[in-house]
Length: 470
Image: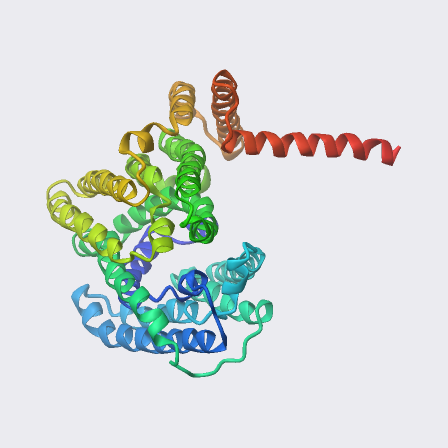
């Protein structure tokens, strides 16, 4: 994204963002989390794998067919013929994503996520090099599309090398998936409308360049957060599934995971918000400076999600997937009217405010669900990461004092070194405050103790290794 931002124009990102809205909505309508279903099943045989593969194949075919059928009216609605071919091409991404080897679930069940890392790395490397090569030679929006399609395509192909499986068509075990997937599919449709409503509206009332600026700011706010949250969710599903018969341990595990997510996620979002202008100037260039204000407030709007992030794995471990639909319907009923009103009345900032309100109400409802499932009070959920909250406050004071001074700097070297030094100072303040508070309350078990143990082991290893070299 950073490299393409220097090679392409904001309008290119805006065009692909419009095309991806229909992809996201149709993909959500046909969402089949087959791997998660296999992880949750206590007994799995070959027929389960065959059924999972067959469902994934049928889903991919249906998805591509539906997307191609709606591409013409979609392109007509936005008065842009380029969307016709672009939307059809982009449908290959979600179609291929659903064909991952079903045996990958065996690794997840055993808490081995090495294959996931290898798959993601292979897909992203091929997508990165291909997208950059096309952007350099053509300066076309197709570079974004090619990268979007190649990443899941290569990841899916890699999965069959890591978890060999000979595809066979069968629906013998459909009953093992149908109840689990039905509610999730409905919930995903609503969730997708939640997330794509703003782009659908902006695509009609804003220019491609303006939408490109919004898309860049939105992705920049989300990517660092998702980069560490997404890998956590699958292990949590496995862990919660194992502990669901032991209420006390499940409750402690959920609260520990929440504290860990807030501990890492909160400084990221606050840091993005306070350093927004410097980040945009440094990584994207002056032509993207219009996205800085959007990034500042989009990052803030995401903060509430941290406090109930592990809800998904918790609900899935209990098999009560109908909760997702209720949750997403509530969010949609609040967000959609606010987004429409905000977009028409206040433009981009109206949409951001609508997001913030809907996210806050969604998290409150999520905490109510957690209280019902594992009897963890809302107050306990809010105050559990208090050390992280106070530590971020200290970091925010430092960044708020220094960040405005960076606006006067020119040149990538000067701005880059100053930005890096400011980020390092902010991170040091956060970590020092966090560990001081942790020690002050008696060094309880948690994310701080885990990191401290890892650092101590690493230090001992280096000490033991030095004499051997001598």
